[in-house]
Length: 157
Image 1 (cartoon, one colour):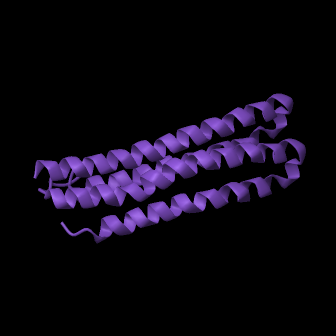
Image 2 (image 1 turned 120 degrees about the vertical axis):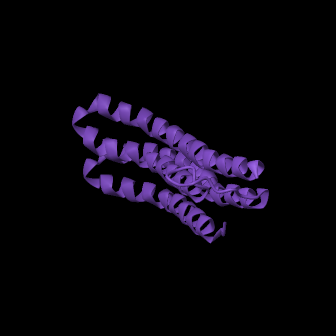
């Protein structure tokens, strides 16, 4: 029974950790480009701030998934449920879609946002196009989160 709980906690930790790493890397990449744009024209701070913040959502998605796993086993606001190692493995694997899509989409969304800073620098009125391009990458993080939610909800304890 203890192995099952440990595996579920590992799944929650991977969801937060990997998706959070993707967000941290993406926000860092975008932030470097944003700093260059703002150093040339401080008036563009508001436009680049949105692009810089976009890759941060993957970490939030991973955190939501972790909360769902921890609630499922009773570690948050409930009575601790004794789960088998089989259920623990299921919860760990259920957390992987957002863990992996969060890691990769966060990094790549940061790169798209960094490239979008060029649009903001040269044609600020076209900044919406940069946001749309970055949002396309976000789609896959959302799909990873939805897969994780469906998988967690489908596991019977």
